[in-house]
Length: 131
Image (tube, rainbow, N blue to C red):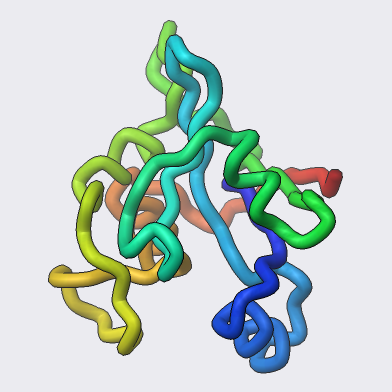
């Protein structure tokens, strides 16, 4: 997962409400064309995939943090985790401006929560670094 701070109205509100510098999250997927980030945001209008560079450039001061699970859940020979593949079940869903817990629209943290549960990622611990 990749976290960053966004300087949008929503990002500022989330930062004030949570006390966290991280106000946006996505999941990295490795492709033949390079790394991409699956995310849901008001700016993209819902769940979309953007290049890693584009994702980083949108963030405040281009700072970000990447966290990975301590256990490697990828099947042998696979570059992507089950979580990044599960995200495609939500591809092109609209953004949830009302933050409802349903399947018709989805916001960024909800996207991460849903495909983490689907792919059996548990909170056994993560390791990460901030850049």
